[in-house]
Image (tube, rainbow, N blue to C red; front, side):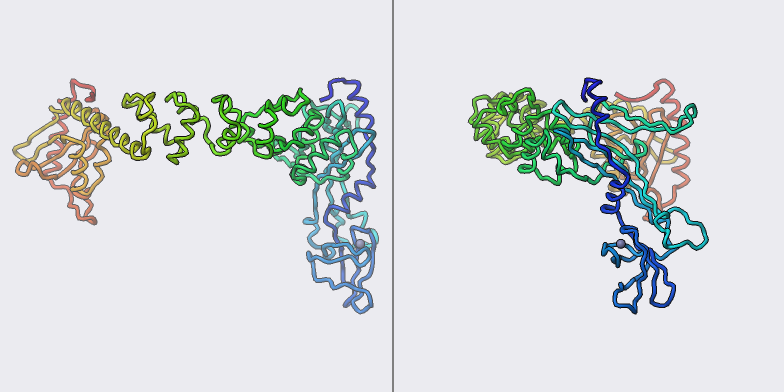
Length: 531
Ligand SMILES: [Zn+2]
């Protein structure tokens, strides 16, 4: 933004005029054009071309004619030879609506003036009656709306937005240009939800003769120009703000600008724009600049990071690692935890060919097991993957032991849930381990195995209903919640006959009733059972 309000007003008043004729010719050059035709005798067509605005007869028996392949097909105008789309008169007029945004560049002195417009072309409704071909140009309308104004000067860039509304007080349409604090790409949407950022540049070559010519020439030589054109407004703003962009481009650091233009990840890169010397702008030595020229933002960012971690490392080697390493934050965590030197860590990773994230995982395992990770024989095992696997197994076994300990502790609280009914010949047995529950699920062909963990943690109770005569043979499996209510009681294959199960017997139903009453007494004094 240009801070001086007077200068801003002066600049706004100095915009070169763009006439309606100029906008009309832009639309004819860049927007779809049509030939409207009507057959009035066999082989004879009355035609009107929206591009040249001429009316003519296309006579297929004459010497000069074109074959009209049909409505909506491509062809050429007999008068001006332009590529057009044929439209049968009176058909599909609603679809003949086109909209395009334009950015018109003009040079005045050293400054670049940019004015944007949205141009719409369409047919006005001519009613149902027949209309004269010769007045067709009054039916084919071009409508233009100004949207933005930008000026790019040696003092900076400034953007204005067009703003208009009908004033009831003044009884006419009021328009104004509103100065914006920040510049950025133009947006042609009707609302913030319907953003339209595309536009066609007109006359942009003039920028090469402006105050920005040095930066722009450098950009044209070193960057992909079509990419720059996509973000030309943003780029011009950046050039106004930072005239020394030119030096970055010329020394092979244009990738930073390109990433910025394309709104890519910048990896926290910072440039000291106040400096005119590229070495100072990038805080790099001559040798570093030579090695890092034409790399990418991520490599450059990693380079700075590695330089901070080990200022003594050889430049060429550091650039090599900066290109290679993609997960530098993980590397930093590993170094901090192990006290390994950067060199040793990088060398080890290169030798073992493992992912840094796996190494960090391994180190976390060592911490859990209370191993001394400052000891290099532990932090850098000879065979990384074997060591990692071994620790995974140890930790798994420990977790299982812990679970079993919890299981047993909770089972002690469940002792009074055991129950024997001599009359029905049935009883309730407690599972003794996680494996017991898993085995029950397998033999009974149901899913109780999935409940084992929650049983161990005391979040629910899994109980085995067995015949007194066969205490070791799975019969029914029961789930009781922490309040002492029976949630489910299932036999082989969930009692589904289609899968080999049998309907619940009267005995089991009766047993459930009696056990329910028994549980009421057990849970009367304890709100829940969990260790
Ligand atoms: Zn024509």
